[in-house]
Length: 332
Ligand code: ASP
Image 1 (cartoon, helix red, strand yellow):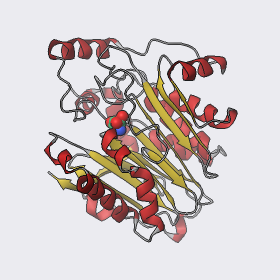
Image 2: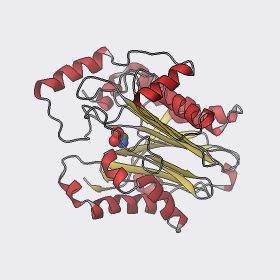
Image 3: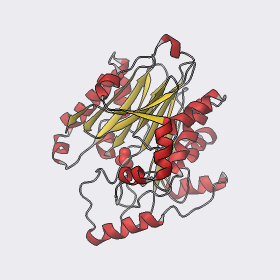
């Protein structure tokens, strides 16, 4: 059972999703959405996938209650990290091929500050550690045991993040130990979230357990500033999900923001970034189930998304309503 199938059957998820979200099937009609004059005092929150959790709503409420953009991003992402049913982020994430859950996360704020942790083990909330790397160290990125040491020094506690469900899935995978395809429907779904506050400032964050059954030490795009996330408060913000290796090779989220700087709409920028991946690395066309998706927001509050393959969804909260939208795509 994959994450989405699992969540469909989970009563809590079903109940909260029914109240909090509407699914919009026509990606085309909402994939490029402008900010109305009446929105000006309303936050806008854009995030990858439909986690069937009040992710965008938490970010929006945090802003409305006077929290900062970073508070909003962090609180929203923590909801996904701590949910054991999500097998692609934080607690409950599927392990690497040696059976270890290793986590990657990053954050970027409206002033261009950035923080990131990679290959972090035993810490429930890598997004919070990434924020502290940004706020309390002169560095941008901490890795592995160094990141863990820093987290413990900041008061985080070591936890076992491998759930029984993940252990079972791992045991099943071990029977064949087949690592191909590298990312498919079962083994991806990063939370990437970008938020715009009432003043039009932008920030974002990204958190993942990465590709299931990955090589030990593998780090994807998600914690890399410019790959899995990029925020330029003068222009816009973008984040990604899917096969991290493909995103890294084109500095994907930075590329989307730069395309917006050059006048492209968020939807066009996301589409061009997907096309760039395929143009530069046509071999990905032959990878079964290959998927990369980008979401973006520009400084005017226009939103867009694009995916290589059908199936990528994103969640957009505007005017106080959260919609789950099917992204446009290249391949069925
Ligand atoms: N982009 C993530 C990674 O490559 C995976 C995902 O989005 O599901 O680690």
